[in-house]
Length: 443
Image 1 (cartoon, rainbow, N blue to C red):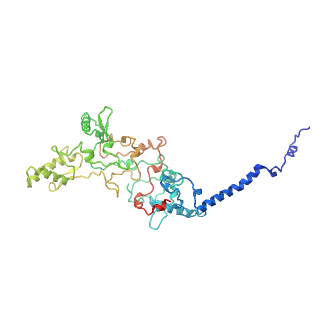
Image 2: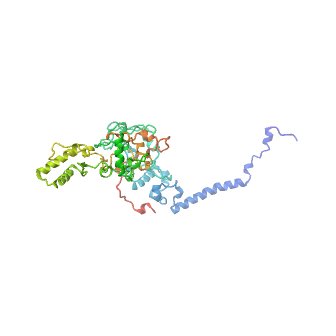
Image 3: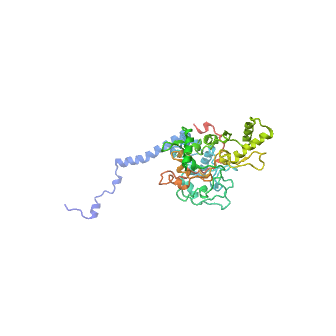
């Protein structure tokens, strides 16, 4: 039999109507192509009839909204189809649902493009543009850097003088228009860049307390610390002797955002008792000290001008020359009206606080948040150069370079903007009492 060598002869052997012949696979394919969409549509219709919207759920809820897992209507207040027929109205209704629980105040006046709310009340909207739900995130506040960089990589400002005068850092501080991340374009911290001095009016030498520079000082501190053995912040050195650590005077305050205030009675008196000729004197205001001296000296039988003269004689060294007196730490002045008026002791300024938070420690980085508790595995001196500080005016705040040792790609710790910065102005959020009932949020 001769072989078919040309292509035309080979082509005539192919049945061109093969696709029209019945075949089990093609039959099932046709049936499934029809049946599966019908079953899916019927299932969706049945879920809708029951009011169950889990079919449209994009994913798990964040930890903060876990109680809304089965109460979609708490946030989704409109028909689901509006998302496709009128996306703008759907987004606005979703944002208003957020504002039922969260005030969402804006950050700066130039965030007007993010504002949508009732007349006369500024509230940030487009909440879900930054806080993306249904991704099973632990914290919705941990927004992606892209949301911050969208503005800060090319920040539009209104020019000099446009910064609010109420800014805690001052209306004149620099505004950087191009920041793409902590490692890219982030400026040095303002307080460090300006080489600000600590305005606290009290004499203190960190270096002497942490690493005394003479044998006499070392022996004095070791002797004093023996009586304090067992207290938090008193540590054993490599040679077995005791030494102070930063946490003795600066324990963390509840929450970790601040350090607890330094108090004479708690942190200073045991080593530095206030004395007058070896007699203890209370650490109180000058007028109260005068009353104490008058009461103590009156026991000797003196009165009238004689008693007043003795009080004056006691006050002069206490406020001007006694090494165990007030002038050891405080700036003192007898004043022009002394002795008719008690001496003057300058306010230390240790706890000026921010507006509304008077009495708390000074905050140098007012546009950032920080928690000491999350950094407690580190020694304080890794970030604060206290061992070399001999002047009260030394600003012991860490620099950006110190933070980059950990918060960088090389350090492996998060560099996300939300790690240190918040968007909303917390001073303008709602009061602690809300407007909802438990049934409004939990089914």
